[in-house]
Length: 241
Image 1 (cartoon, rainbow, N blue to C red):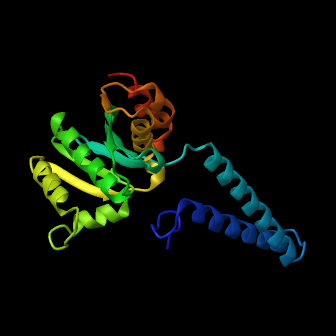
Image 2 (image 1 turned 180 degrees about the vertical axis):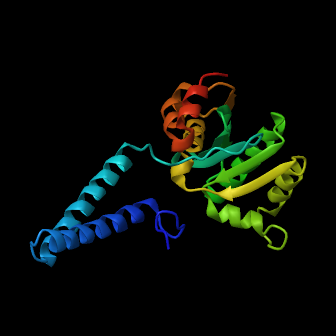
Image 3 (image 1 turned 180 degrees about the horizontal axis):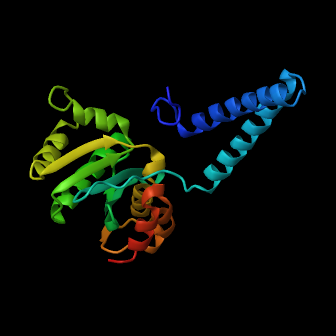
C-alpha cells in the first residue's frame, strides 16, 4: 500500500507516518553503519520531537485560517439565510435575512412582527417572508437555510404531520412551487450570523425594509461570514453591485 496516495490517510496522517518511519530508518542506519548501537529511547525522542513540530505547524496554519462558516451556493443559485428574533418585553418580533450567490451579496431584508412572542411562529413568518422575497426578486433557483431545526423538520414532514403552522407551510409550498429549484435545510448558528443581524435590526429599529446594497451594520459579518475558498471572491464582490 502506498501511503502517499491511498485515500484512507489524510495529509496530516501521512506526515506523521512518514516521520515515524523516517526516525526508525535513521536509527537502523546509525546502528548498521556507524556502530553506535541501537537505542530505542533516542528513536522515541526523535519521533516525539518531530511530531511536536508537526503539531506546532498545524496549529499555526489553523490559527491564521479564517473561520469556516457560510458556504456559497453553486452557479446560478441564490442562497437565502434567514432568522427570527423576539423581544418579549416590548412585544415585538422580527425576521430578516440575506440573499447571496457564488459571488456574494445580492440583497437583504427585515420585517417587524407585532404581538407575536412564540419563537417557532416567528421563524415560520421569517421563512414565509424569505420565500416571498426570493419570488419578488425573480430568483428561480433557491436554497433557503435556517438555524431552527424544529421548523426544518416540520417542513420536511408537512405532508403527513398536523400542525398549527400547516396553513403557513401550505402557503410557502405554493410560493416555492414556482421556482425551478427550491431546497430548505438546517444550518448552524455560526453560519447564520448575517441573517441574525437583519432580524435583530427589525426588532431594534422597529422597521421593515430591504437593501439592494450591503448596509453598514452588516459590513463586519458579511466579510467574516464566508468559507476560506470563497473569502477573496466574496470580499472583492461585496461592494461591486
